[in-house]
Picture 1 (cartoon, rainbow, N blue to C red):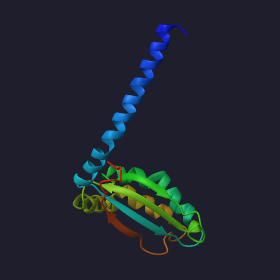
Picture 2: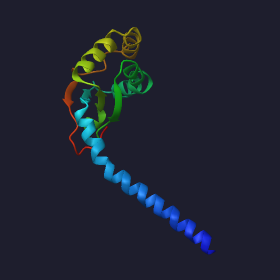
Picture 3: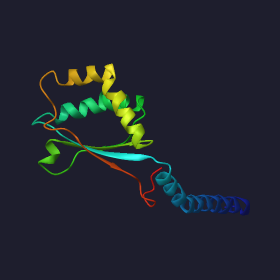
Picture 4: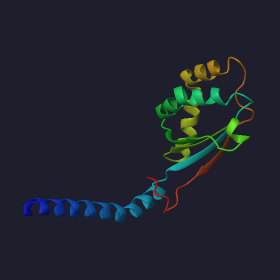
Length: 148
């Protein structure tokens, strides 16, 4: 390898390391901002009737997430437990709102949305999906969570 190429490689590595280090050092500030900007996260747990989890998952995959976004609700993540019996009937997800007031307004608009009304009705044509009302917990990010 020529000397100029060697210097170029050393320079490129130095720039990469500097950028990585700067990104790591600035991460805590981003997390603190997440907590202080009023954003709230909502943890929701849905329990379905026997055999209805695939219906619920399809409804979220194909419609609900998009309709959430339409009403200012940010999708964070969706999970199904690994262990039975919850793996057969439980959906757990986290969404984000700009504030608790924004969450109230978004949910009100979501429930009243004609598209949601039709999606909900169509997904339950063969019977109810949920065994009970969803469980909801509002949360705020800690200063060390790394969420923004």
